[in-house]
Length: 500
Image (tube, rainbow, N blue to C red; front, side, top):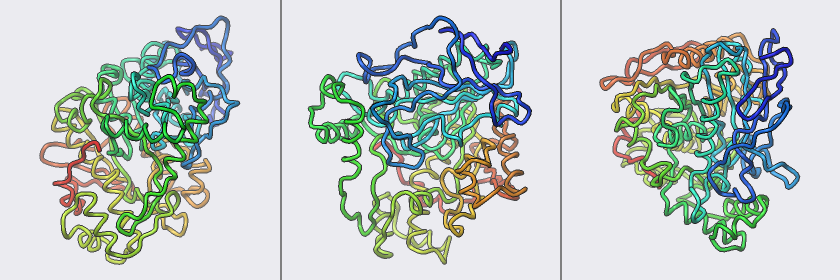
C-alpha cells in the first residue's frame, strides 16, 4: 500500500483514505469496492456476475450504495430511485501492509434479511483492524431482490452474493495485508443466519476457515413457503409470478409491494398481536442450501470450520420494546403462544418460575427470544461439535440501562462491544450515555476474543464437547459455566427446529 493508500486489486487499482476513527492514523479504509456487477438490467434476479475491470485508479473513499430496501426496521437505509444500482460492494479496514499475513474477518450485516448495509456506524472495523485483523464489510441483496422466489432464478441470491464477496477476499485480500488462508466469516442476527447457511452450503466450500455467529435466527423456509410469499408480493405489485414481469418492475415498486404484504393485518394470534417485520429467509432444499444447516453441520459438512457462536440473555426485548408494538391480552395468550411454538404443558409455568415477578409481556419476550434465537444458537454449537467441528459458546448477560432497564440484554446489544464502537449513536442509546470504565473493559475483552479466535480458533475458553456445553457468560464480571445450566433448555428438547 503506497503513500496515497492505493492498492492494486485484480479488477484495478483503488484509492482509500485514513480512517478518521483510528487513534494513531494507522488504519486505512477502502470503501465501496465492487465485488460483483450491478444486479439489475439483464442481471436482475440472477446469480452475481463478475465486476467489470477499470483503468486508472478508482476512488474508494465513500461507501457504496445500499441494496434496495424499505424502512421496516431500525438500521434500514431506505431506497430511492436516485440511488445507483451498483450495490454489490465491500469495504476494507486494514492496518497491515501488502506482504503481511494478518487474519481476515469478513462481516455480514443483519437486518431480518430485509434491510441493512455495511456502512452502518456500528459496523466500523477500525478498532478490530487496530487489534490486528483485516476487516471486510459487505453489502448483499436483501428482501425480494435477494431472497424472493422468482421462477427460473436462484432463490438464495443474497447467499450467492456473500459467497462472491468471499471469493473476492480470497483473490484480493493479500494486497491489503490479509491472509487469504485464514479467513473468518462473521455476522449477527440475519448475518449470523447467513454465516450458518454458508457453513452448510456448497457454494462457499473452502472460502473460510472460521465462523462467528451472534444471535443465530432459526428462521429458514421451504421452497413452497418461498413461492407462497412471492405470489403475495407479485399480487400486491399487480403482476404475475414471472421472471420477466417482475424484472420489469422498478425496485421501489417491489419494495412497495413487500411493504403491503408485511403491513397486511394478520389478526389476533391467541391474544397476541404484533406486526410482522420480515417475510424472507434463506430457502432450504435447493442447490445453494440442500439441507437445513443444523442437519448439515451435525453430519460433518463444516467439520473443518471452527465456530464461535452465542446469544444474548433477553434477545426479544428489542422487538417488544422498540420494534413490534406487541400487545398481549392476558396470561392465557402465553399458553397459546407456547403451544404454537411446540412447547409442552407446563412451559409457561416454568418460565414464570424462572422469573416470578415478570409481566406477561416479559414472559412473552423470554419465550420468543428462546424460540427465535437462543435455542437454535445453542443447538448449533452442539450439532457442530457432534459433527466433528470445534465450537465455542457464549451468552451475553450484561443488561442495557436504557429505557429504565427494560431492554435487558437485548438483541444487538453485543454489537458495539464486539466491534469496540462504544461511541456510536447505537452504543450511546443502549448504554444510556457515555460508556463507563466497566463498559470499556467488557468491550476490550470481547474484541480480544474475536481477534484471538480469528487468529487461532481459540477465543479463550473451552469448546463444547459431547459431554458438556461450556458457556462463556459476558458481563461486567464474566463467568464460565462448564455445562450449560440454563434451566429452560429442557423444555425445547422435543421441539423440532426445521424450515417452515
